[in-house]
Length: 414
Image (cartoon, rainbow, N blue to C red; front, side, top):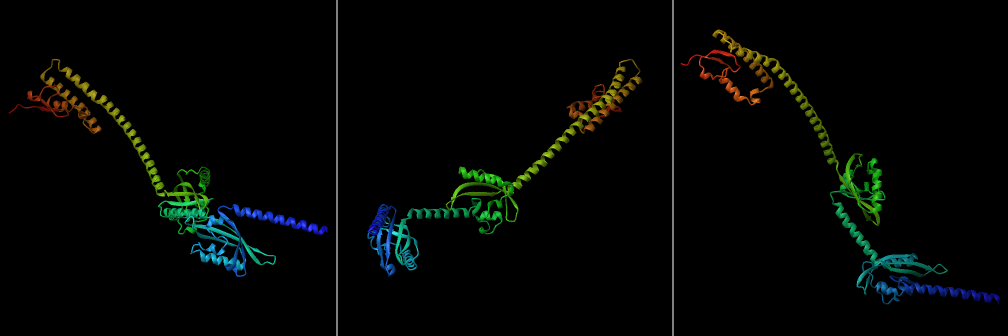
């Protein structure tokens, strides 16, 4: 009697658990939004004998199917291009008793648009291991597919834009090259993208710039702000260094945070800058030499002026003092012969002074009279004698050449 009571109590507990489980299942079926659960029974004839055991009411909301209990109606609004694939996948899962997982386009008659639905189902077996049911659920993934299509379209536009860009560009993600355009391939001396894709970016950056690049990656990852232009050196595949100028912006590439890096080859610019720098250094050296030469020339001119001044003082002044003394004697009574001799001596002394002055002028390479603005005075001196009388008014007087030397007495006019 106790065993019967215990069995009855156990049976009652099991039924209670089953009822609770059914209640939970019904709750899930009734509250499903944007997706639906279902359970179908598999008959001996396979796909043609499938019966709907239960399904969430949301099937109508998700797919627009009105007769949810009729399994065949589930295939009515499937896209013609997808229907053969769906039927074949169902037949395979039933025949092989394997899980079912397909993404299908359905036409929603209420929303009047094509939607994307993903269906996942698991086979259920009886105690003898025979396939009896499939439990599954369907979920509307239209928004996800549209997002994926938008991403694909965006990536397609991105590629078409970047592929034809003259600038060298690549995408860095977690330290690896995920995309590279033809201009960047050419810059690095590569012929195929496969040579670069998946490789570490630091393999193509000169070692002394590694820490700088790591800091730039950290900064852009944290702030999402573009990095400023930076000059550095990259390494070609042949090992040759090239001078470049780079900047980068943060992007999302294939659902991962990444960086779009722009690279400009400035090798020729750096060579030109180096050449200009070298020429500027040479020019500065030449200017310094010219300044030194100008200073030396100034000093030499100053020494020459001092020498000429000394010569004028020591020689010309002596001649002029002696001439002055001779001329002063003319005021004293003397014979005509003595008077002419003193005049002649004074002329000789003045002539020597003029010669000394002309020698200084020749050393300077120019006429002292012209330098001092004395050309009119020289012309007058050529017309007058040492005593200041006009030669044309004193015919028969002694004449002088440009150096003051006596040319003898002038004769009377014809």
